[in-house]
Length: 273
Image 1 (tube, helix red, strand yellow):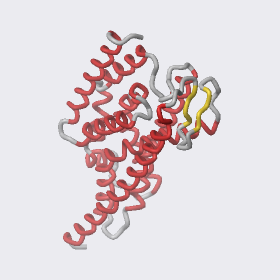
Image 2 (cartoon, rainbow, N blue to C red; image 1 turned 120 degrees about the vertical axis):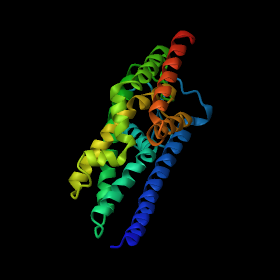
Image 3 (cartoon, helix red, strand yellow; image 1 turned 135 degrees about the vertical axis):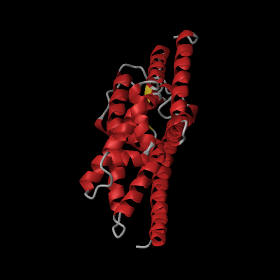
Image 4 (cartoon, rainbow, N blue to C red; image 1 turned 90 degrees about the horizontal axis):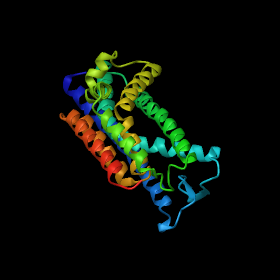
């Protein structure tokens, strides 16, 4: 295959992969908006109740134990929300994987391998979603979340904000962020393109693990601003995108950390408990 033909194929691949990511993100955000609208309930007084984020307007007494179906609905909510928030920032890595695969095997078809890589990445965030669901279950049982899934304790909210802000300055954050900021370096450091579905899946899982390590503390802030607060979700997604995709992303992460610490201190010292 000539260089010009290869470039044409690579350009087509880029459009195909970008289009697939765009559709997935659009579907995820549509689901999140649907759930947020479902939980709004027209300003009704929800005291003593909790909403099941199923998109069908189910309310349960806050004191009633979670059922298996409710746990499943909450897990799906978190998993879809993570796809909507994290897939845009993962797009350069996924596109790079497809490009390296095409260049390494010009006559092959890298789409299946890229799909397995993306599946591994999303699997890592599914693990995080399971942990977030368990945490939500525990905090609700302790009566620490209101019907909008917002922490009712200013003290606990301040602790989460300050802890997330400090994490933004830690060496672990820096290591994980560096892996997310340099797609080609990540691939070369971890063996490059894989031929087998298992290899692609595991490499995507490894990259997703670094991404979780980079962003888990920011995702914990959803409990402070509201798990179903669409504006808060969008702002956190934008922060993640800026951290990973622009050259000064490391300094944006640190500035966000300072802002979180300041907000936590203000919440702790100024607002009534």
